[in-house]
Length: 207
Image (cartoon, rainbow, N blue to C red):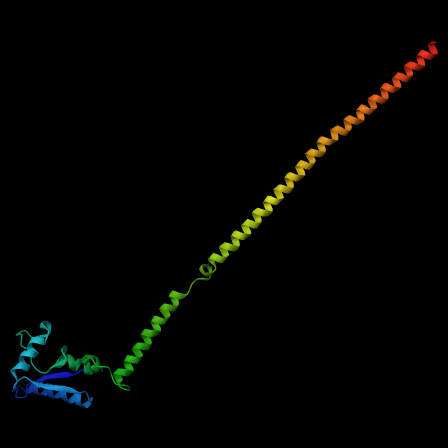
């Protein structure tokens, strides 16, 4: 990446000269490689700078003044935006360059990454936490279903045992009258035999 700084070497404006010196001096202090492009002596540089400064960044008259700063073909800003980035220790971000290790901007970027990553980690942790009820929901359902089935099975067995007892009672009840009837029949036969014997004795006495 090449930083391009468009300058006017023969500008009659003291303010423009001072701004250009501030930008160039600060880039040199940071040891940032840049290419100065003079628009006063090179009409192509002047036209390229005017054409590539975004319309919303141009002054009211439509003619941008130096210094204008680019990263390759990408527009970075003018002196005012450069000065704001300098005050906020964000010059490398302004230029679209990675800050060198140990710089204030790199330290701030590391802090921002830690905070961002920590926040994301907490969010992911919250997302991945599954309530115990949800985790055990299926197993609890299966256990409950098995318990219900066992209870139903026990209920069926109890009903079957109750039905068997009722059938046994009914069968006993049916058999009991049968025995009683046999005893009554035997008594009747005995009475009939006794009556027959008495009649025979009476006939013998009569003779």
